[in-house]
Image (tube, rainbow, N blue to C red):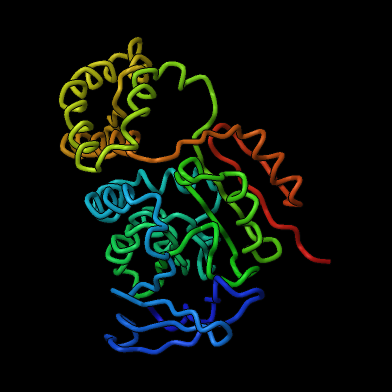
Amino acid sequence: MREWLIEHLICPTCPGEVGLSLSVTAREGDDILEGELACPACDARFPVRGGVPRFTPAGADYCGNFGFQWNKWRALQIDRLSGHQLSAGRFFGDSGWDPAWLEGKLILDAGCGAGRFSDVAASAGARVIACDLSSAVNACRETTAAWDGRVQPIQASIFDLPLRRGIFDGVFCMGVIQHTPDPKRLMSGLPAFLKPGGRLAYNFYEADFWPWLQGIKYALRLVTPHLPTGATLALSRALVRVFFPLTAAFARLPVFRTLNVMIPICPVHDSVLTPEQRYAWTVLDTFDWYSPRYEKRQKHKEVIRLLTDAGMTEVTGRAGAVIARAPTRG
C-alpha cells in the first residue's frame, strides 16, 4: 500500500471518523508491504499483509468462491493483459463516464474482484481505492501493479468500509450487488462516500423474464452454492465440455442464438477473443453462475426509485444498470 491511502482510512469499529496510525515492518521504496494499522481510540488493530490493508475478520468472508476464481483467472478479463477492450466497453457503457473525466479523480471500486474495472479507471488517469471482501484483492494488487500505486486494494466488507465519507469523485459497483446478502442496504449506503456532485454507477442482474428460461441453472443452484469449490469447478468444466460446441454453433446462427440462454452454461463467443479465451471465459462465467452463495436480482426501476428517495439527482437507468449523481451543496 502507498502512504496516500492512509489519509482516507478510518477505524470501521469506532463511531465518527477516527483516523488510523501505521507501523511498518517491511517496505519496498514507498510501497508498504507489511505492517499494522491501529486505532488510537479503541486500540483495534488491522494487519497490512502482502501490501494490502486487511479489515476482514476471520470467518467473515461469505464469498470465498470469488477469491478463488479471481486468483485463478486473474488476467482473463483485464483488457491490457488479454488483448481486448471488453471490460472498458462494459465499464464506460454502464457508467456513462467519459474517460477524460476520470483524469486525476479519486474513485471507489466497491467489489473489485481481480481489478477488471479498476484497471480501466487507472488507465484513464484515476486514483482508485479498490475494495473486496475476499482474497481477490491479492489478484487486484498484482493486476494493477503496472499503475505505480494509483490503484490501492483494501480487503474489507463493502457494507462496513473503513473509509472517510464524502471523499470520492466517483463510486461504482459492478457485477457485485446481486451477490450480497442485502442489495438494498448496499445501494443505499454507497452514496455517502461521494463528494457533492459525485457520480455513482451500479451494474446488477436484472429481475426480468430470462431466469424463467434458465430452469436447469436454477435447479442446479439449489445445490452448487453448498458444494466445495473444487466440486463446483469440476461440474462447471464438465458442463462446458458438453455444451460449449452447441452454444458455439447456435451463436453463428442468428435464428437460434437466443436458445443459448436455455443451456446450463454461460457461453462467451465474442469475436475479439481467441478460441482459447472464449472457452476459458465460458468456464469462468459458468463457475461464476453456480458458486455464489447469493443471487438476488434487482429491478432497475426500483433501484432508480431507491436512489431518488435517497436524494440522489440525475438518476437514470436501464435493465441491469443505473447511474446517478450526488446533490451539490448550495
